[in-house]
Length: 128
Image (cartoon, rainbow, N blue to C red; front, top):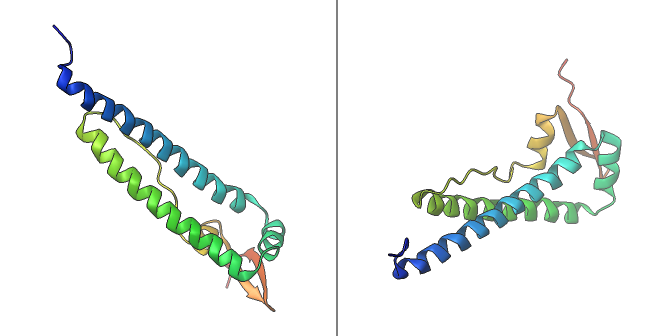
């Protein structure tokens, strides 16, 4: 007597592949969050230097690509997590933080401005 009827073997294989895809997406989200964390860990001077090592257009494209890619990964994670949960498989994950760069900096008490055509990262002055 088989534990799994032969007709269910396909479903078991699909579940295993869904779990593998979910694991891949969890890793992708983690990598994307680490990218942001590394940038946000730079002090004001180093972050300013990095921002100014690129053109403003390229920085804008990089941040937009991160947001779009992060949203896509988050959607795929959510959909796959539902599939797994509906199959009785736990599926916890940390989504990609797709807040804007300015919002992430503000959460650290910092801001980025453009002064004389250059990026400048500084602390937010809360005393005003």
